[in-house]
Image (cartoon, rainbow, N blue to C red):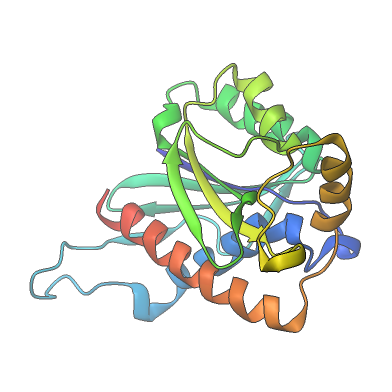
Length: 214
């Protein structure tokens, strides 16, 4: 099976904030998969057969696991999508609960989608075992799973600038880290939202391909 995790903070208070791009991307990905136009016909020339079964057609809440989830099956492989409801800094609790229920789940089949201050807005990276220098949600996962050897889907959100037009990258100092904590909880501006929406579409397209033919 595969596990796709989107990181964020639950509740309307945090909707549209930079820290919640993991939630945003998962919503778009699930919507794409459920859409008929993304179900590849079995007779498509040059394309692998794509058989999809929806086990849950809407997001459901697990109070015990403190998460929202949705299940489907792609080409005979089970895929679970989850959004932890623990607040960002304790995201590992929900992921560890899923891993406990599915001990056969290999970490190299886990994809965690998250915001990243080490990457400029409009860019992304999908890397195995490598995330940003600082991210409390990921640190919670590392602690609970005892490893960082899973796929990091890193959506850049850094759009602060300094004199001379140079981009700030990451959080190299305590002062900057404090500023970063405030920054990630702010909502995207209108122009930034247009950029992140395009980036999410690119990331979702890549994840969709990996799920379809991986």
